[in-house]
Every structure is written in structure tokens, then in C-alpha cells.
Image (tube, rainbow, N blue to C red; front, side, top):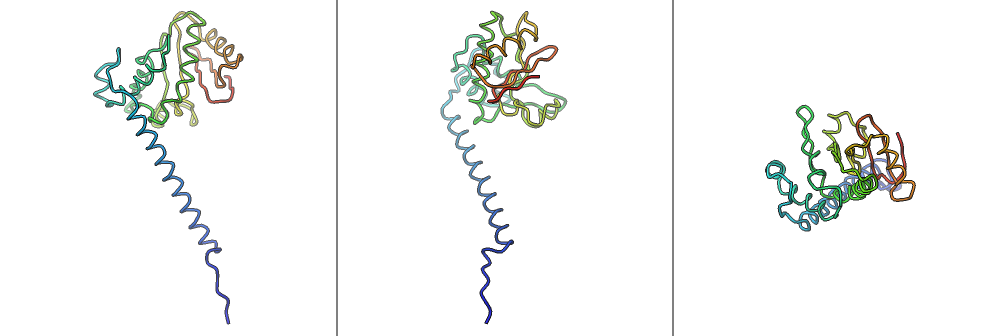
Length: 203
């Protein structure tokens, strides 16, 4: 007599099970992201927002208005929807940037609130937001870091009118030291990077 073999414990079966669970996990994650995006699409208004060009809407669709209305709803004193959306229409070579996926929209709110507080603290208007969200392809085109917080929609590269990057970075770190956020502050020659990644980093 021979014993029956339990194929459920064989390496082949275990490998198949792991692949199945991996595919299932990816499918569930995809569905969750789609559901979050669908909720965002239903919730945010498509009403015109002052300062948002119709050409932007024509280029990228009504999500431009939805995202602009989301930013407007944050009620920031020194940051406008136009400032936030403008970097998403940049091009490097043949690579165009894009709006962040809808499920990432809320991630930028804490960083924008930090920028808003910095503007009030320094009594200096925001001159320009150079970079916020970067699509993976656009991030590669501008030679951004492979794990850039810009791809997570948590980072802003910013300039303030009449204030040097040295002073801006010092103010950002001072606000961070008071517990208002946890994230990165990077000083460059012509702008300052601020993100709310959840842990502190400086460069």
C-alpha cells in the first residue's frame, strides 16, 4: 500500500497559494484606491474657481476643478488654488506632469498648512510653489529621488517674496520644533523644500 500524498503542503502548491494571495491583495488594494477616487469625484464640486484657467480644465478635465475646490475648502490665508495647481501643468522635455491621484489629494493639506503658517509668521507672501506632486514619469524626467515625497503628494518646493532660503528653512524648522508637523526641510540655493512625511529630516 502507498500513502496518499497531501499536495496542499507541497512547495508547488504553496507557491501557487502565495501568488494567488499576492494577486488578490493587489486587486483589493486597487479596488480600495478606485473607491477612494470615486468618493472624491462625487464629493468635490466642479464649480469654477477664481484664478483657475479654463485651458487647464480643457487639458486635464474636471478633476482640475474638483482639486481646486478641495484646496479652496482648506481655507488657507496665504495659499491659493492657482498656486497649488500650477506646478501640475509643467513639462520637462516631452514628459508632462499630472494631477495627483484623487486618493492622494488630502495628503498635501498638512504641508500646505505649514506653508500658510510660515507665510503668516514671516509676513511674506508666497512668491511661487515650484513643485508639489510629481507623477513617477515626471519625477524621473526632472531627476527627482526615487522615493521622493513629491510622488506621495506630501511635499512643496517654495519661494517667499523677499526672504532667502536660509531664513525660510530656519523658520520651517522652528515651526517643526514646536510640534506643528513632522517632516523634511531642505534648503536649496533658490528655494526651500518642506514635506510632512511623519519623521524629521534635514538637508
